[in-house]
Structure formats: structure tokens, C-alpha cells
Length: 114
Length: 113
Image (tube, rainbow over all chains, first blue to last red; front, side, top):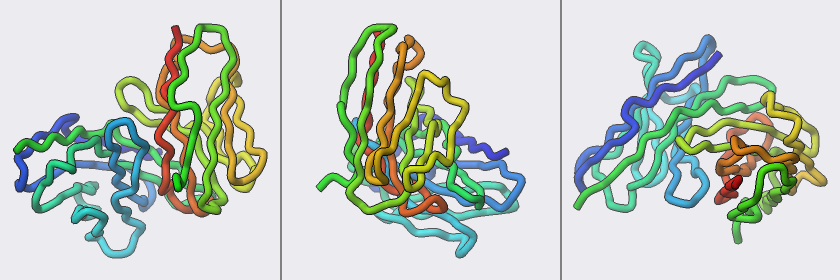
């Protein structure tokens, strides 16, 4: 079975500071990993995904994440936070199979202060 | 043009009633999903359809019945609504059954009085 743990339900950074959102996964087989963003009163948008190619994955809006098998982690980073980055971020895992069933983490709310 | 649109956006109703939520995608995707997000923002898949065929059914109470009249539409009917059904329900779509959901609707906030 797969699971995802997001460390820190709330993260607060200053505008221009580094953003680091943590995600650890558990999977008995090599997983696929994803980060989604949810802005207030909206649905989720895919930020980036890891599907067993390059371990450093770049996504939209300068976000990137690195798959580290030894640490079972897939942390999300952005060099410089913008006010518009304030949102809820979800890490998710799935495994290659006949269909794609995402297992989501509990989410991390990112606040960005001026 | 909205990629995945669901209606209504808000649904307030009483326990015991029956209600439906509709979802449409204009992306030409083969696969559609229903997810439930509870009050703690936890997201869980409920159902998935691929070309009108049910492929994921996550032990959801049989009061919930999805229907896919064609691959662009996936509706969710809920019978005998209970307090615990209060949540935000999201529809999503993906290119095919192996791809991850890329586009989600804006959600239907269901409140049971």
C-alpha cells in the first residue's frame, strides 16, 4: 500500500524567501509522485510530476522537486516566494498499474508575507 | 473555456434528500474521476470512469451512484444524504486511465443541514 506524509500543515515564508514543502512517501514498488496546488475556492492544478525519469523535476511557476529514493522524499522547493504562491499544496503518490489512483497527503498551507 | 466544469458550485440540503452533481470536460479526455475533500482538506478518490466504464470504486456507500452517459460527462447521484456527506466534491479528468488527473473542477460544496 502507498501513503504520503506531508510534514507541516502550515508553512509561512516572507516574499522572496526560499519555499520548502516536505513530502515523504511509502510504497512497496517504485512510485510515481506528484505535487498539486489548490488556490482558495478552486480545484487542484498539477504543479509537477516524477515518473521514473530525471530525479529533479521542474514544474510551473519555478517550482521544482527532487525524488530521493534513499530518503523516500519528494520535497517541493521554489527559490523565491511570491505573494501569489499562497495556497494549499498537496503531495500525492500512485503506482504504475492498469489505472492511476492518486493517494494524497494531508496538504500544507503556504502563507507568504510581505 | 473551462476545462472541467461542475454544477452546482454550492448545494445546501437536508438529511435524507437525494441530490445530483454534474461534471463535464471539454478536453477530449478518456478518464474522469470523483474525489471527496473533507473539512480537514483530506482528498480521497471515490470513483473513476474510463470511456464510460467504471474502473475505480473505492468502497463508497452504495448511496453514491456515478453515471457516465458519455466520456465527456460524469455525474454523481447521492441518495438519502447524511450529515457525514458534507464535503467538497471534485470532478477531474485525465487523458487516459494511466495518466494522472491534470484538470480538476472548482468543486461542489455540499452542506447537509
